[in-house]
Image (cartoon, rainbow, N blue to C red; front, side, top):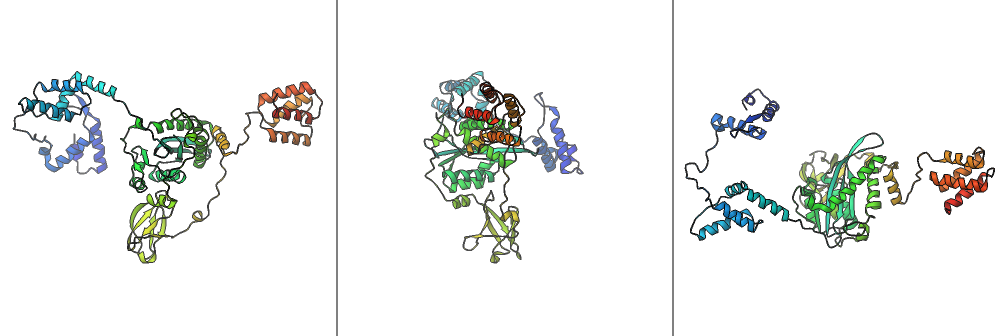
Length: 500
């Protein structure tokens, strides 16, 4: 199977293609089964052949070759099953120790290999029945923090696709931190890619507003297991709770919160999104205007009521939050200019440090400039920017972001900046038509009349179609045709203020 891959003229890529093709072809095994040989095995065979030829491909002799093998006594498996029936949760190592002790008490010296006993037990139906019963009786315990900020939970949800108004498609994730005791969202950020820098940024955002937590619970994602993130938590005195990878049921609270995020993603189908900043605004409005105000079944009150604005007793200044998460980078400064490239920019070290190999401390999100550690005093020295671009000095004026949709209405209501939202196909032209029917003439008859109707619409509109039609029908029956348009409008405004 590896003969073709031994060709010395093959490049590494070509050899890999040959071996991958061989790994897809099924072969007959000594057991009679048809299945392919794994790619790792083919590479191992190739390395062995190069090392020692055909002799190296022969199986290595067993370590116990030439010695008499001890068979497992026939009564070991039945006795092991009896002990497991009595205590299904006992570890296999403990079971072997008990069995060997029993045989020793009988004057028999029996050595029970762990793998042999495991294999023999797995062959019996009784052991499978014991395992099923053990899994049924195993129950997960629940944990919940007693006080706010005792434990925070964090996770990333995504990716989900968003089509912005320019037609470009964005892949987005939501990085969130919730409080374990109150289920309140402490920080949530929309990011294109979940990175360690974004994890630091969302934790820093929560800590600046609410203080520090006692313990931090997240899955084994690389962004939460990175050295800089774990080191920052340790320096701030935040305990990182160990969790097993792929154990979603143990993170039930934030998984339930993610179902709310899924609802947000579904609503995006009816929402116009300008860009990622606008998407962040919509998420803030959804979480703070809907999720935080909604009664939570687990705590029997809203997250906002449960948190009640309480902050942690453990607070640190912003500078400590920056210094805790800095990453070390060792680079040599240019011996003439003192320049060094860091985080996509060129910086200049102090003149006396030119040409030296130095330790630089970088902020993962890049929110603050890097610093250099003085090799003599250990002090943190500032760096000077080699090239200052206009965008580095003058903040760009962000354009107003607004898009039609239900999430925008929720955001506007949360910020107290409600915008008028008309019903489809009902505006000033339709109001002109309704007034014309009531007055029995063309409306508007003049610019002044049009301006009067427009002022009423701007002050009291937008109006709903059916209530407006019903109100004007009643007004027409009460006042009759031929009245000044002001009379109909005053009657309509009175009904808007005091519905009949």
